[in-house]
Length: 111
Image (cartoon, rainbow, N blue to C red; front, side, top):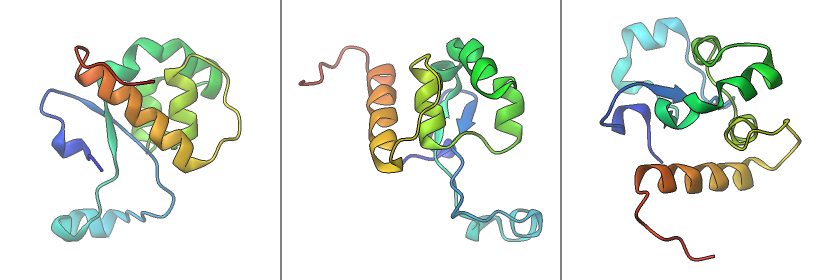
């Protein structure tokens, strides 16, 4: 799993994982023991700002400040479509497929 720290170029957008509890105390006082949530390259999600506003009535920056989107919400934004219920594992796989295509546009993924 990639985390925001692993993106080498610029800003990232967080993926919200409800099972990772990030209390302000823990982040401030135990940074090495604080789990890192996955993050997407900002430049991947930025062109989908309009869909984020349609789906969530908030800007991407506001959503990021609030902790990000879950896998299904992020996939809906990236695919420029309304959110619909979807299994987290399926949505996560689809998002990472989009990330891989974005970060390595010259690779060909077998269908």
